[in-house]
Image (tube, rainbow, N blue to C red; front, side, top):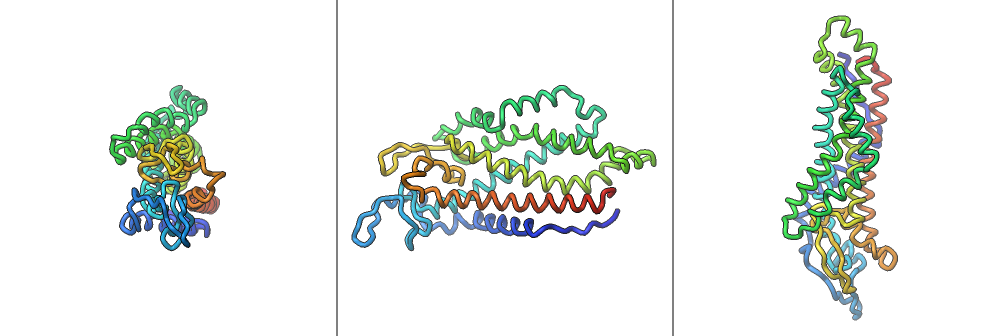
Length: 310
């Protein structure tokens, strides 16, 4: 087999660098938090004046405080691990299970002819993943007595399952198209078995495509988490407490970034600074995933143009 020289655009390495940095922060974050996540600084005093939360960034609170007087840097450091792990695990498991099923279906002589495939795709078009996820997760999201990790694992399983049909369809279509290539037909005429052809000719391209599909799924999952957060469905569940304005508010129990972003949406006009930091961090993670995905896509297309028969 021809050895392909791996070349990736600058966007790929930039995105991977940002993701590695965020992963490092997620790993060490719980060990370097400056305060307890439940500690509330309700009445800070500055220049002789009593100032209530939220507080602007200062030497005491580098990222300021939220509407409850909690240190934002602490919440951000604790929440990143839930955000990053959820996105990577959901996307990875979708690709693993959906990819295996899709490849097997694509290699089958009946590929694309089963009625069930068409039915599942019509259902997913009629009911987008957001609506399905919301109705399945809304109930468990309210269970404040259940451990955060348990709720997060159940949510992860639901998010994986609702995304598998689409991944199966993508991989099946990919393999079905691949089977019709002239070099595959030539291999068959030369006596190559189905599994030999799959291992020698499909897998070299499929492993590159899997990486691309993985990061594309990460983007979809992160967007889905943001959409769910708007309606108060947070990774790890939610709880309700009163803020300094004596208004009951739903907050995330795990401090994941989609929850930090959307739980203060009611203050977007009166106190926009509360959500600027979560918005910026959420967009940074999304942008990092986009850069990696775009870099892989360009590199993948370039390799297919240079080595169309490998």
